[in-house]
Length: 288
Ligand code: AMP
Ligand code: MN
Ligand code: MN
Ligand code: MN
Image (cartoon, rainbow, N blue to C red; front, side, top):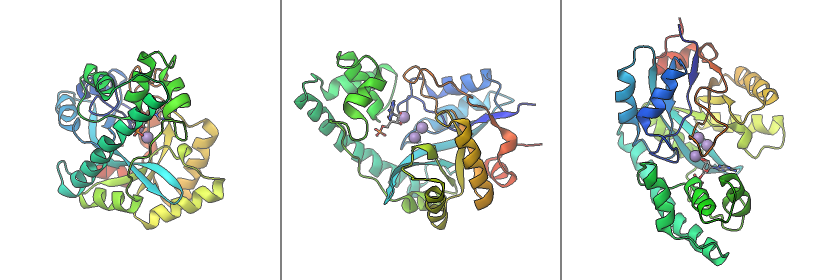
């Protein structure tokens, strides 16, 4: 019986490096009980991943998406799970977010040019195309193009110097409020989970609790407790908050492929048993 799951991964449908079926393959090699593919602002990889997972007896596949949102406390990512594929409420929202990316990307490239980084949108699109990707371009593609142009030694350094939040070439996207994202996920029959709370701008534990309560008022269903950026003491804090507030518990690697070389599918370990019965039932996961 397989005991671990990974509910947060990216494919080349967004800014991951592997095709959806290859991510599924990795999850099976890691002997996971369940995998969710959660590309940024797109569901384009889900059909291929689902088809690949259907060939495998011991791996459950959960359709997912990672949606950008913004409230008074700043930007955040919401993970959606178990929604109906192609539902117009969700697809309409995701399309808006993708259009906003298409407006933003050339502005970031222009800023880079003004900063002396010799780069075009074609160079950025080339990075995505080489990975077999689709239309979606994220800052990770831009960071890789900066590295290739010789202006950073790693994508990490490209974020620090140019495209990280607050850096010289950073441009905001148009975000929707979390309530709107949660409503769209619910309308499509899905659940909404706060991704990697460690990246939220909260001042202390009390402040985080207030933010979570506000999100719960907007319909939030769960919190990502296990994540590759969460040190053990954070995991403990998020676990106890989840239990006290009655939020469902999830976890995942945030795998992207070689562009984030320290992150592999299935790590850190998220026990299937950590996911509550209600969520497991909703996602069709067998905890017995
Ligand atoms: P975007 O959605 O276009 O703003 O791009 C955000 C993506 O860039 C995230 O999903 C990560 O994959 C990546 N990213 C953000 N910050 C960093 C960082 N400091 N180092 C490496 N990758 C990052
Ligand atoms: Mn990403
Ligand atoms: Mn994220
Ligand atoms: Mn992610």
